[in-house]
Image (cartoon, rainbow, N blue to C red; front, top):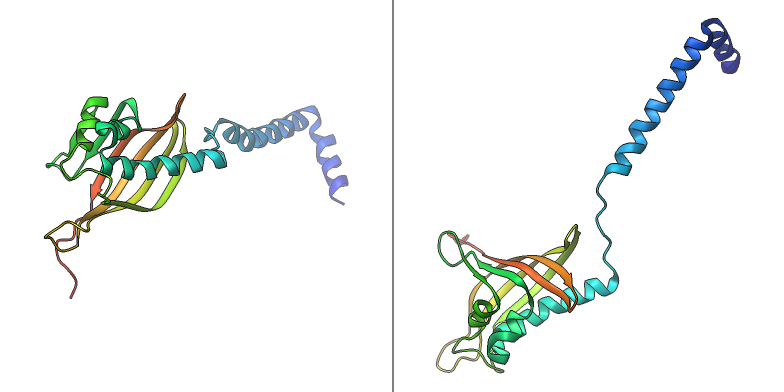
Length: 186
């Protein structure tokens, strides 16, 4: 029934109706196919990429707490132009950029093999056009300091930009946001 109706309409309208119908069909196909082709594709991360990025984040805490290699074990986790931004340091935060500035950040009097202070958890990694981004919760604990009670110093989260270099995944940027609790619920 439908095919005979279509033949009837097409035969009455002739080539003009047929051409218009072809234009409509091609237009509808273009509206569905072209946007899908033009959407930017996120590069896929391999399982090994996820593991390597997780290891980078874990090495960060060890390198920062230990101050190993005069702080350069920490600095070498960043790209040469990499930056750490501590948003808990002043109203606009404080940036540390460059290998020497980053190494100095890890050289603290408390640094050493018995200093375990930075603990990270709930790491989420997302592919991005330049590599990957990530978010991870962080808690800074003061544990085992002679003469002081154990305490939670502060906590918050990191927002990261990771890039894959010829020496593996590195931080291009790491920003620390301290949690703010003004009033404790009762």
